[in-house]
Length: 495
Image (cartoon, rainbow, N blue to C red; front, side, top):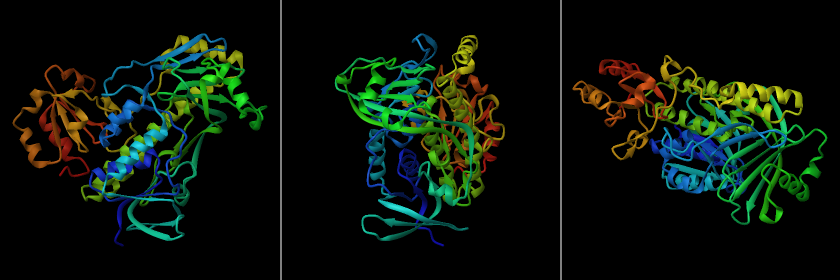
């Protein structure tokens, strides 16, 4: 069957928009189907990190987005009386990955920026108000049927592959008949967004109030937007705690109080925070990503970040397969790499959540002592990818992101583009045998670090590293012949 598109994407949130742009920039024809008419006007996600900002850099929206973000300087955990238990400090300066480690943002603003990028691409067709109702997963293509809510017209699209970025109630996941692994966390929280009526000069630090009587979280999500998350207790009546006067009582008595005359209540809703991971992320020509594949409690701010990592991992692999540079089996490494990585973050978020919402004062005190004696055990996780493309994942920094320095006036990723890149010392890259790599692998980017930047390679104990398009290190080498062998063994062509 002749496919209309290389990739169909169901869902037009941040993950779907990012994936579509990454694919189109690599020459693929993409269609996005979305049942809603426009951007949801209220915020949901609120945090992104430096790794995700690198993905946004890759699609050309990072600088614009950064202007709309608020840099966060870390997170504090306070006890019932407001005393500091632990602090994850963050600097406000750009770090090893080329961006500030943590940003807070307003999701509707992010989506507007991403959609403007999508709309500028001639290789992406967007079908708004198209409700997908049937999916057929064939050997040679995927057929998607949708109803245009504006006209009632039925539409049939075919693609070589389909990616479900269609959220927690994903039709794609259900069509794949995939069960979800429940990691055991489930708790209702009241989420509140407030817009400042004037600049209150609040410190850009998130606060977890570990109060057994009423656990609570507060943060500045963007320039004028503030968020509180308040645990719902079993005895709470939802219709009562969502009344504006009750909400303002919560806020005015929190560890980050503001007066009701200083803010405009924009949204309040009760959400169930839970921990679910799909047991399978691929079925034939169908994939799931983002909330369709996983949900985690928000205590590490990694929910949307995980979805953007999904898109970054899958995009270059789909491009390689659709362009005939790799066998379809390359796509199996999407789940094998991403699922273990995601699970570590989910387990970390669960542990943070269990601590934050402890209601037993004795158990809380025991945990506090443990935190003070062993603070590193409570640091945010930094796992390698699971086993996949690289044969020795996790060893000597393999399967972890390479840093992003400025090299001769340009950030490293801007020089690498959407290709594999061999990044090495000047002495390594000046060797005559490098010419073999240039002729044999035309798309391979060869990047020589500047004098004085060789220390960036020390964590890998190498003269050069082979960096994947998603910026993870595939291999580390000491000599050019090792690099040639490493690249020749890749299960894809760098042409």
